[in-house]
Image (cartoon, rainbow, N blue to C red; front, top):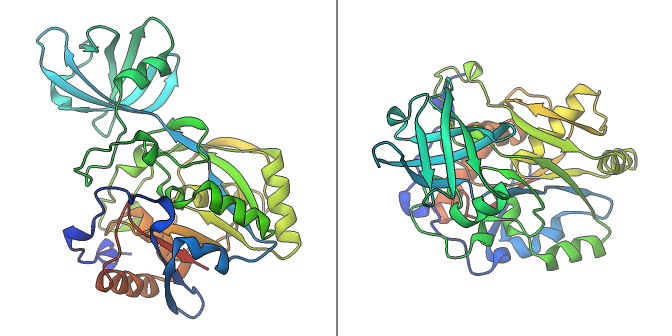
Length: 342
């Protein structure tokens, strides 16, 4: 399957640079995955398209202020470090810019010595393994020195760090936000519950896969980076009950989708308490076992994310929906508008 099948022309001005003042003020495109029909609405009206007995599954991961700016201790040369995954203790997989300057043995200094790091290894994608040294609590130091790791296509500074967190985030560990959840407010969540719609939480810590483009011409050769996921016994029980009673499971975001499909795929369509690492890559031809619908944002051309939504609704339907979104000037990517595939 050729990567060019997932390409489209996107005007740069449609890439949302800042979040809207109100989280739920974004637009919502509804795509009927069976008929291909497209409807335009507002995110505040999401509840009108979800029925009592259905279940929305939210990813409760919390983004670390994982971008650090420092310098090489030996030369004073500036470096930028993005934390991706904690390997053990104080050892992290990272992306470093410029990576050529940071060789094994190089010492980095952040915040006038408040935090130091030594490169102890390299990664196949050009990343670096860094062991950190500090006094106190690492996450408190990170909160003091780090910045939110906004995607490279966002050029504006973020005034309020919490706008790159969901209102229900609680499990810190991501290098990027599960952006489909950014539209939700406490009020919307309360209205959803009051209608008799279930809400379940899973955790998937978003890692390097978010930053890696699909570079293979044949997409089946692309290798996803593994990310940590977790499902509690309570969530598994709720999801199984929803299924048994004929309700729909609607994932909020591609991260929730990948977690649900990983677990359901291993257990014959059932959900179980489980944690582990997933590198599942979902593209057209995939047979969904865990979800019936999806809330998602509008994604990059040729990305693994547009391939996932194409697997759910059909490539031609998705490309037609994206064409419609461009014509109607929807906002794209992390701070953009939303799509409901149902």
